[in-house]
Amino acid sequence: MAGRLNGKVALISGAARGQGEAEARMFVREGAAVVLGDILVAEGEKVASSIRASGGQAIFIELDVTQESDWLHAVSQTVQTYGKLNVLVNNAGIFPIEGVEATTLELWNRVIAINQTGVWLGMKAAVPAMRQAGGGSIVNISSIAGLMGSGRATAYHGTKGAVRILTKTAAIEYAKDGIRINSVHPGGVDTVMLDVLNREGKQAATASHPLG
Image (tube, rainbow, N blue to C red; front, top):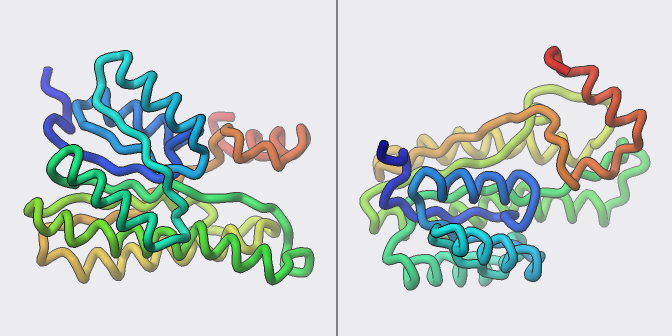
């Protein structure tokens, strides 16, 4: 049976571990060639090597999503390696859990730079290449935190809400170019990013999901 992504080329940020790694491996199983972008070089290279060893097409590119030059390089290398760019997954993010008063201005700005500005820079860099390819798909990873509050993680919630509306606006702007732009809003996912929670916090998060 043909894979749903046969012949497609995807760039995924934050792909060295967690959700990004899972996304990359799933895309390859569905037939895509994948470019993994991350600041975690050793981990990212290891994942790309593992995918190639299993017969998939994958390369790793060092990518700091807060830097426009890194994004331009990542897109350029993707096109140079695979000839085009069809899919972008804006997955990279961080999850500090401080509330309003405990959040410093430095932390606030850092979360916005990675979770929100990084998404905008990714779209900005990818759109011209997708237009050249005749269209494409951008998937921005938001969160259930972009739909509802929790009483903590102030900056995180703020950025994920922003990603939701940013996605809607960009989707309207680029529909005429055949570029679909969607956000997805997963609930809690037990990855390294949730290590900021203690055991009781993880238990509470699990209990909040109907399926446990």
